[in-house]
Image (cartoon, rainbow, N blue to C red; front, side, top):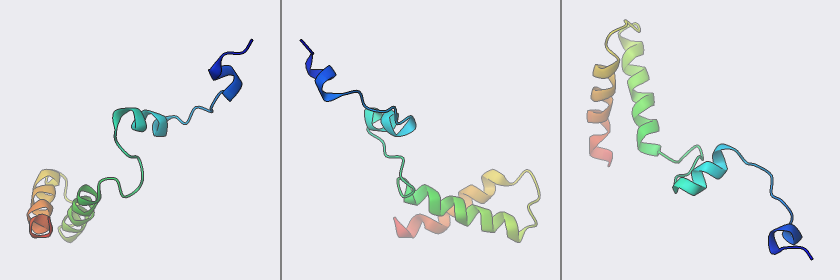
Length: 71
């Protein structure tokens, strides 16, 4: 006699998506829109100063300040 799980068949491993469901987080592209917007803004700050290394945190913090009024 088959158990309930055997009769339903085995599901394929979905990797990080399955892990994300278990942790309650989503892996979709818009899962963290605020962080994505900040990352894009920080990139543009870095681009304006010629991508000089050592200012990554300052770029991120400025981008957060820029986005602060949106959220």
